[in-house]
Structures are given as C-alpha cells and as structure tokens.
Length: 179
Image (cartoon, rainbow, N blue to C red; front, top):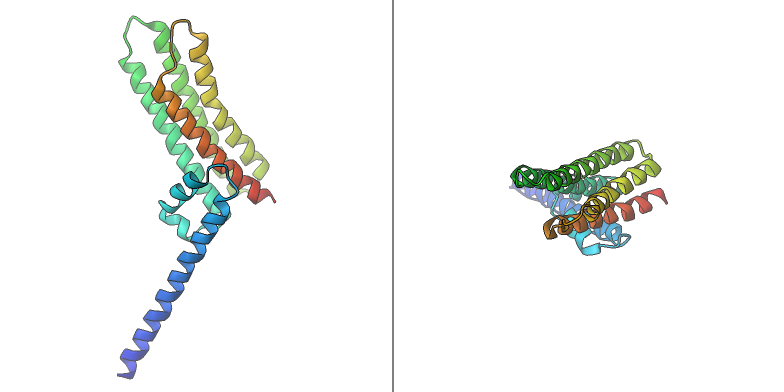
C-alpha cells in the first residue's frame, strides 16, 4: 500500500510540475506576443506549435520565423503553379509570375538566414534578414504595377499581407530579444 501511495504521489508531483510549466509558458507566449503589433496572430501561431510549450523567447522567435518560411514557400509554390498554368501566349504575365515566385523564394531564404542569426544571437542581422523577407513581397506587387494591363491578384495580395504580419510579429519579438 505504501508503494502504491508513493507512486501516486510521484505521479501527482510530475503532473503538477508539468501543468505549472505549461501555464508558465502560456504566460511567456502572451507576454512575448504583447510586444508585437499582431497579438492574436502571435498567440494563435505559437500556441498551435507544441514546441512553444518549452521555448524561451528566442525559441518563440524561431518558431514564428518558421511560420514565415512556410508562408513564403507556400506562396512561391502557389505563384509558380499559376505561372505554369498561365496562358502560353501571355509572356508578360508568365514573366511577372516567375519573378514574383522568385521573390517569395528569396523571402523564405532570408527567413532561413534569420534562424541562423537567432542561433548566433546576432539580433541585428536577424532583424535585417527579416526586413528583407518582409520587403520581397512588395517587390512582387511593384512588378505587377509596372506591367501594363496586369492586375495584382487578390490571392497574392492576401498572402503578402499575411507574410508582412508574420514578419511584424517576428520584428516585435526581436525587439524584445535585443533589449
């Protein structure tokens, strides 16, 4: 009986410390996200990733950068698919879509560099690479604007705004790390 009681006690201790750790990291997530311009996006993205439960602020930044990399890569793939499906006789549209796909691929590359910078605790470089990632979609929009007769597609605009907001969250977290 004493052995069973001590086993139950040990299990309760482990469970309560795990619950305290999860609650503590939920507080870390919320406190970190309050330093960003997109609190709800930040909390939602971080709470949906199980690694956030044990991550420090730098780890939370890396997780958000990963969200941005997925977004940029998915957008590059989406645009490349449209490039392939574009009317074969519209060479201007095909070129614009290819250039835009390339810009989103470069955004993903910049975010990969941001992760390396975080690992090195080179926050100024991380910020610089994140800003580059945030700006590449603007270049895509400008390419469309310069091409006569082309309209910037709504879906690409929506994805641009999403990536800009994700980068905005990363920016806020980087500001917190640099303090």
